Length: 135
Image (tube, rainbow, N blue to C red; front, side, top):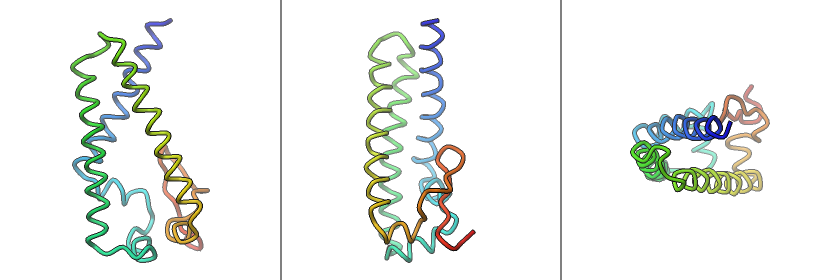
């Protein structure tokens, strides 16, 4: 049973993390904008210039590259070391923390809620937010 759980934890992390990291690294704009029904409207309501949008997508690309490095390291290491599972735990725990902080900021800002919605319509893993009045 222990081996089954270790394999399930390792492989589920690898699949989800690798796919997400590849998308974030190589197509950050499409990855980010796929989360919104109307990205141009959200950017306009938030006052983002095209340069600011590009900067956001470069930050996403950088985070994707870091996650991809973690996946590549784990592909090489496999499950030979307990440190592999420590790394998986740290990435997951810190990702949850970062997402919780982002969600807290988003939900605490009326401007952001107006631009991207209130997250009540989340669907399929990450989901798509529908801005109020656009259903």
